[in-house]
Amino acid sequence: DILLTQTPLSLSVTPGQPASISCKSDRSLLHSSGRTYLYWYLHKPGQPPQLLIYEVSNRFSGVPDRFSGSGSGTDFTLKIRRVEAEDVGVYYCMQSLHLPYTFGQGTKLEIK
Amino acid sequence: QVHLVESGGGVVQPGRSLRLSCAASGFTFRSYVMDWVRQAPGKGLEWVAVISHDSEAIFYADSVKGRFTISRDNSKNTLFLEMNSLRPDDTAVYFCARGSTIATFDYWGRGTLVTVSS
Image (cartoon, rainbow over all chains, first blue to last red; front, top):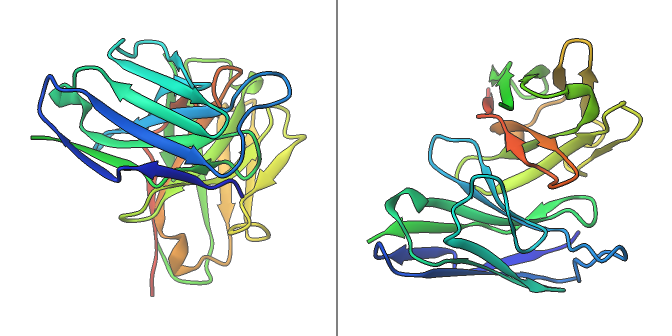
């Protein structure tokens, strides 16, 4: 199984400040097609998980542009340019290059 | 508007069975891959199973293989998860999620809680 390791596991951020989460894979997530199957999700308390970023760097419909994704191969990063109170929750990276699909451990974002 | 609603969760004794359902609306259900993902209490997300749009391709996580069966009824826009020989470590919130050409899971339901306990 592909192992995804997220750091940090928790984050406490002052509103208006940036935040960054790393996701490292033990194998490249680059497909022969040129697509990289790495996604970012946010799971807010009491809500279903929501897709933020697909294929490393593409924001999903309705996702604010303060969220951005970057990286390649095995190293990926989710950045929030200016954290807002509504961004609290647990952030997960996920890969779907190989079955079983696997998730990172999750990074809990809190507001200071 | 994509809408996924899970049902069928509850408290069940170890070794017993339970069937979960996921009612889909707001999109052409028969055209999409569907998955089940679970979250044990205090833990992260774990993929459970996937079924292609026509039920021809089905895959399971090793942790549920041979005990769980994913299926769908495209005429009723409903996804199912038949869970047999349940164990305490199957205790989790079970989410159904839609797969698309954009993302493996682009929309999720709110989940249904399954508790396996004597």
